[in-house]
Length: 198
Figure 1 (cartoon, rainbow, N blue to C red):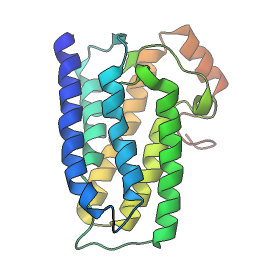
Figure 2: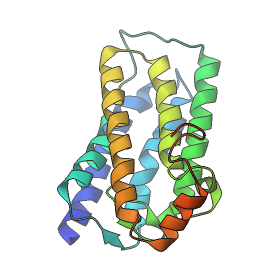
Figure 3: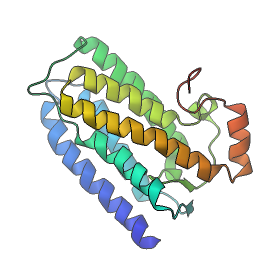
Figure 4: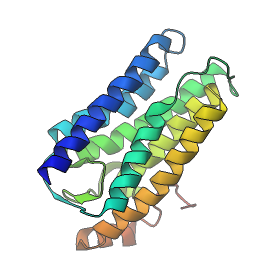
C-alpha cells in the first residue's frame, strides 16, 4: 500500500507541474487563471501532508479517481478557441468555484486523497450543504475555464473529467457508507453535489 501511496503523490506532483507550465504564461492576460491554478494544485500539497487512513484496494475507484483528476489538468488556454462569456463573468464564476473548492479542501485538510479512503468523516463547513462540495467547486471553476477557452479538446477533457467525478462520488460513497458517521451525514445532507438536483 505504501507503493501506491507514494505513486499517487508522485503522479500529482508531475501532473500539477505540467498543468502550471501551460497555465502560468497566460495569467497576465487572464488573472483569474491564477485562482484556477491554486485550486487545481492545492491537492498536491494536501496529498503530501495527509494523514494515513483506510484506503480502497479495488482498481476501479483508483482508475476513475486518476482520470477525474488528470483530465482537468490537461486543458489548455485556447489559442484557436473563443470565449463564450465576458471576462468579468468568467472571473466571478471562477472565484465562486474556487472558494467552494478551497473551503472543502480546508475542511478536509490532511484527510484529502484521490481514491476512496476514510481518514475521518467531515461534517462541518461546506459539508453541511452537500456531501461532495469539492467536486461542486471544481465543476463551477471548470465551467468558467471552458466558457472562456472553448475548444473541442477542452470540452472533451472536461466531459471525461465530469463523468469520472460522478463515478468517483459513487465509489467514495460506497466505501464511506461502511462508517456510521458517514451514514448519519448522508441522512442529514440529502444532496451529493448540487443542492436540489443531485
